Image (cartoon, rainbow, N blue to C red):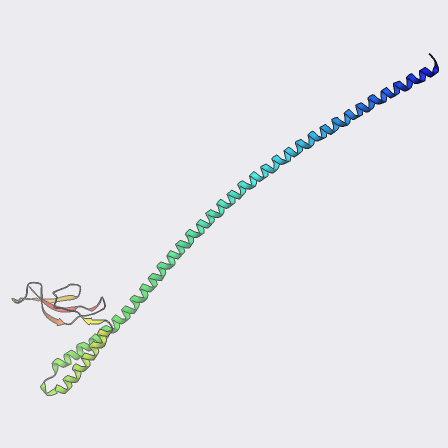
Length: 208
């Protein structure tokens, strides 16, 4: 074999080796890319799972927080209702105490005026025909005083409707054929009341 043929065979062999190396290199690059793509895909899947987990945890936390806030709002509403109810009760009690205080003051004042009424009535009974002018003047004063008392809610207790232990006080029992047993025979001292409050019970005698 000539030198020329040897050179041609050598060049052919080198080209064949280079071609194989190129193909092998391309295969390695493809494999590396495929491997890289596989890693990237797995990483994306892991990241998505992590995000889903975080979203789920965030949703659970939000639900718990909303439930806690609702419970707190309900608690404050109950406290408000309780405080408002207590305030209304205190307000009503103060208003009732105020009314009772006013009524007590009026009752006490009216009781003092009733003593004057008693004195005027006794003065009228003590007058005779010679002191008619004085008697008329006392009667006029008594009438005016009773009118003022009545205008302010102070009235005499009615004894014509029968004996009532709530407003009448039985001082003595007497025999009487004119009225039934337990009925009022005579009014010994007038009684008075201020609205529904008894200032002084009427002193009466009743039949046996």
